[in-house]
Structure formats: structure tokens, C-alpha cells
Length: 606
Image (cartoon, rainbow, N blue to C red):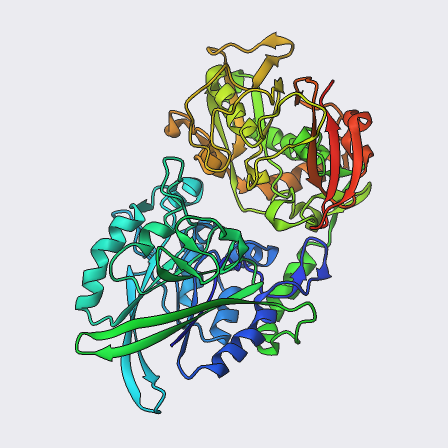
């Protein structure tokens, strides 16, 4: 039997980049569809599943969430491909339950979700924990046999925290492995011959630093799971992304011995898992498995015309809504040097947050406190590749230019934070950097795998980051380590005055971050959080339209503490030392690396 899967589509349906308004032949379900059709033709028995995070991620999805009167374009595309079942990921909840329910209602296939449930009295209803699919399979002799597939859906329990502003307590969460273990006997009792887990989770290492959304290996160990389809981390399995992982056979495609797939993201890959089945006195068993990924080729076949036709009106309306010129950039706005503290684009984003927060704090007690703003470079290379940087030149700024600055439909949150909590916030951000020793040879700057979206800059205060000191937090999960030394944050000040632990501030940031996203420490009193009615991108658009000219100052709130060392960093291939502002004279160009990133050497000698 052949199992096909997609995951983390993030509403990439057309081969198109809405931020640049250009064709993008590297991704999109319409381009992936010919590969899916071909994989189906090769096997007599096949099923197609999606592992979540399909309904959010492009401007197409944002527009669809605001129009509940017509079928969601992602669902229309999936209907065209005759998906057999799907589960939900954390980002599918970004627009709230009403938008999610409207999207699922149009689906001609079932959803399953076990560990996220409706809170008492809440509606609309979430999907059932599992679904049973009755299929017929053909053996090598041409004989047909009935087969009942049990499909179990699982999602990150932190979804209810990350989307607290949109869900408003309407959803509860449970630990995924415990829920799955309890449901497996029920599924078998209901006649499931095989159980496939659609697990929107990354693969942890069974350590104390594993965040709750990395539970795939726990599901793989459960007795009764026959195949595991994972996602969330945007990695590829089989493939080199998990080479050396103790629980993973990265070449064969297995987790803890269970056949498994992780099919990348953005409609670039389809996972193909062939299960060899045998039927005996105790029912069906898996006797062998072959896993693989098929990616869109460099010269892809034509996009599926049925998918393009089914979503054409949504696509056209989305493009039209993004054409308006809303402001002029007086200086280049970029995140090319965000990892070393110079990012004019982040300053504009922070200014938009501050503007919104001032409106939110009118006649509120938090309005009397100094206001800080935390922002992160969502587009800063890493796994997304050398083109994944914001780099807007001087000149007209269109609505579509905001997509990379604020790609998620997060609302803003304002809350109180103390000086002690602020210091821990900054220590968590500084954990993304490697510990550096004095010496003549350049050392890598960032911890491998540490995403840019965890690298917060806090505007409103000034501070230094001492790279010689050990980190207090895990770079990936944000889990606290045993503290050694006095931390990395030095000279933390407000208007030149040292910040004390007892000082009080108001902080504005995304609701995702305020509710614990990225392992940051949420405020002690969640009831005291204020949430904006508009999303961050809407706030940014309003700020740009009001200001008309975007001319952020060139100063930066932080710098590295001087030391006799240098670091090496990967950035945009278009980067020049001039992108680094006041650090320009400390930067040396080392050329392009094998991945296409620009390699730069930064002297830390001050």
C-alpha cells in the first residue's frame, strides 16, 4: 500500500511569491500535483494525507480568512487532489475557530485531531480524534481485500498558548503521547486494521530541553502505530536533515523503527511511503516499508490546471489587494545584518508596535510605564535559504512589501514586565549565539538551527551581549540551563540609567511571543495582557500610511561587548559592508559559500 503526504503547505498553492509579485517555480501545491498524480498511477493502492499547517502562510490565506462566504482556496485545491484525510497544525488556528470551521466545512475529506479539544460550551466544533477509512486493496495476484485505516491526528499542545489571542480560551490541550496511547485500543476495537498517525510535530531527542511540540519520537514508540507522518519542523525525512539523530533512520525513513515521513514545507515535496502488507489470522501487519520524498524538479512540469482554475479568483483578488503604494522608504529597509544588531526594517516594525501600543494604553495604568518593544527578524536566512532576508531598497513601499516583515496574522500584546524579567528575555535571545573565545581565527556566530524568529531585539533600552559568557537558555527550545556566570547581558540601561530588577515597564510584542512562543518567559499575570484587534501587519500598514515616509534612525539598541576575537556569519548574497551601518568598517567580505550565502567576518574588537 502506498501512503502519500504533504505537510506545512502554508497556503502555498500557486507557484507564486506574493511579496515580490513574481512567479516562483520552486513551490506550490499546483506544481506538486503532477508528482502526486504520477505517484498514484504507479501504485494500485494509495492514500493521500496532509499533516497540518495548510491554511496559513501566504497573503492568499490571509485574504481567505477574511472572506468566509466562499470555499477556502487551500481546501478547494486539496479537494481537487482527492485527499483522503488531514489533521490540523498550530498555524491553522491563527485566524480563530470560526474561520477554521468555515474552511473545514468545504472539505470533501475528513479531519482528525485528538489532543486539542473544544473547551466546555465553546463552538464551532473541532474534528473528531480519529477517523476510519474503509478502502479496498489489491494484492499482487489481482485479488481485492477490504482494509480499514485508522487515521489519528495530533498537534502541538502549545497551540492554545501561541494562539491565545485568537482562541480566547475556546480550546483545551493535552499531552499528545498520552492521548494517542489511550486511543489506539479504541481504534482497534472499532475495526482499524492499520493506524496512521498524522503528527504535526517535530522530532525531539528525549531530553529535558525538548519543547512539548517535539513529540514525534514518543508517538513512534507506541505499540500499534503502523506509520507516522510528521511535520511542523519543515525538515525532510528521509534525508540529511536528521542524519545522526539517535531515534531516526535518516536514510530509510523511520523513527524508533516505525516507518515515517516528514515532507518539508511550502509544497516543495510529497512524501511517498510504500508499506508491504500481509494478512494472517491476526489481521493485517506491515512486513516492510520503503520511504522517500519527491521534490519539484528544477524544470517542473506545468502546474495543475484544475487547481489553478479552482483558486484563480482568490489569487487575482490577493494580488490586486497588495499593489497599493502605502509609503516611501528614505533608506534601505533590511534584515541583512539583524544578527549583529543593525536592522532598519526591525526599527520600522518596532515603531509600528509602539504606535499601536500607545493607542491600546490610553486611560490604562500601564500607560504610565516606560514602553519597550520586542521584535524579531522572521526572515533571516537559516533553513529558508540565502534569499530569505528582507532587503527593500529606497523608494516606494507597497502593501506586498510588508508580507516578509510580518508574515503571520499575529495580534499584538501589551503587558507589564520587570527589570528582572526583561533581563531574562534578553538572555533567551542571546542564547542564539555561540560562545566565543578570544583568538585570531573567526568563529561561527549563530548556534546551528537557531531560527531568526527567536532572535528578539528590544527597543527602548540599550544593552550589550557578551559572547564570552555561557548562555543561560537552550538556543532552540528556550529551556533554561543551569546558570553559569552572570549571563551575557551587560550595561542594560534606560535613557542612560542602569535598569534594576525592580524597575517596571510595559512591553509590546506579538501575541505569539507574549504567550510563550520561542521559549520566552510569558508574563506572570496572563489576565493582565492586552491584545490588539488588528494583526501586526495591519498595524504596520496603518503606521506606514500615516507616516508616508519611512526613515528610521541608524542607531541600534544593542551591540556585542568588545573582545579580541572575530566571528563569521552567513547572510544575503546581496549583502555589502554598507548594510552593516555603524559596523561597516568591522566587516570583511569572504565571498559566497556552497549554499549561496554571503560569508562575512566581523571583528569584535570594538
